[in-house]
Length: 125
Image (cartoon, rainbow, N blue to C red):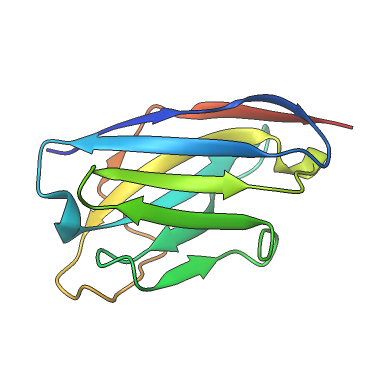
């Protein structure tokens, strides 16, 4: 089992920044690709960003490219999502997720095995 705990959500004005963090425990963190998903009211959950277990490869949804940055620290068992130039449409519950991978450069976008409880991000206009 992998336990994931998100932090850093909150209320911010459009154009502002937030930094989300996810702390992992339970298994060897460096064996897992990590991702951030979000779900807005009435919408399906969508992948926002993902990072390989090595940290060397990343994926971003088109809607956040150039504004969000995903990173990880395998020594501290954490993954971070830096969100800049936030827009009202970024308002959602953000979830951290983990997936066991066997290729350190692989960046999955679905079929994640473990999920955090979510953290609310609200961007006011």
